[in-house]
Image (cartoon, rainbow, N blue to C red):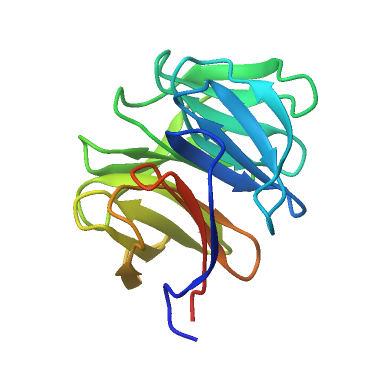
Length: 207
């Protein structure tokens, strides 16, 4: 397989898809136009159920094994959401007013900052910034974790980057399938990717 090869793709239920994650069985997608969070079948893209987004501009989305985390871009908050009721369980201020995405790992949240060209590691309880690393290319958008590496999309270069979180070193990169890259999700084998220009979700090979 070739890194970045599209395995499958399907249209999103809304016109401005952004945040994307997987709980291991389903995909979860937040759409900025409909203000809904969708649970989707990862094979067909069929909507299984929806939640009302707790923010009028729902952006990055991730799964911590039990709950959803979302960037509330309008309120500039990180929001922990009950996946059954949609209720906000916890929230805190983001380190930047231009943070479109987040990724969760080991009780930490990683937050992208487009204007500051940084990716922040935050304590998921307090929101305290622990450290930050330079983004790969200058306009970081979507984020996803794979063990000790961080995947990110860049809206300037239209590429997906794999970055070592300890050193910040770029390990590899490949072009996005569309022209308006948004969020990423890692399913343990492949990457899932939203493009808000095409209003599609792509499943991508990484090798």
